[in-house]
Length: 151
View 1 (cartoon, rainbow, N blue to C red):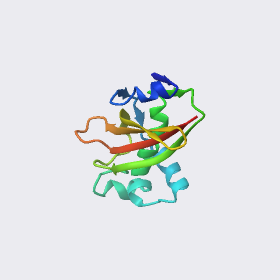
View 2 (view 1 turned 90 degrees about the vertical axis):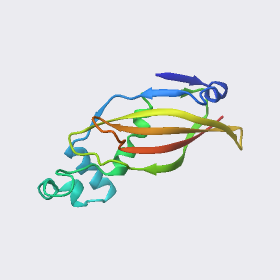
View 3 (view 1 turned 30 degrees about the vertical axis):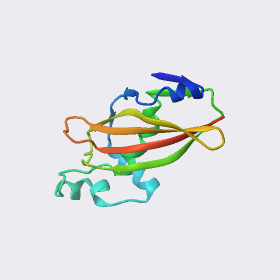
View 4 (view 1 turned 90 degrees about the horizontal axis):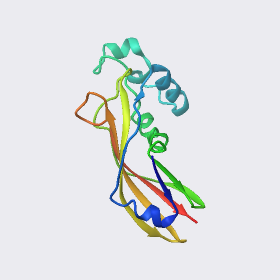
């Protein structure tokens, strides 16, 4: 766990590898809950019988479910203090190179690509997120996460 206290320490994180989170297991219950919340009930996610005969041999997690784990997994790696607020500003270059089958494990590897000033005396941090899929040569998801910090 890395702690950055205040803007000077946030800025010093530019170019730094933040490490990897703990593994998180993908369960059918998590997939079904995400389907309920998102409204995405496509059979490749929610119908284990039909999915068994499909292209992946079992259900797979929604790509956006995997992506949604970025913030809680990042919280295992980075704690920012000494700011008034942090705002999720968005994402860049989101891709889902590999399916995430039920029963598999995912973890986040994160690094800080850049920290730049923004209006209202804030800074913007862009982080590389790679969601590693245990036993796979391809990541489950790759994205750039953008957060702005303000006094």
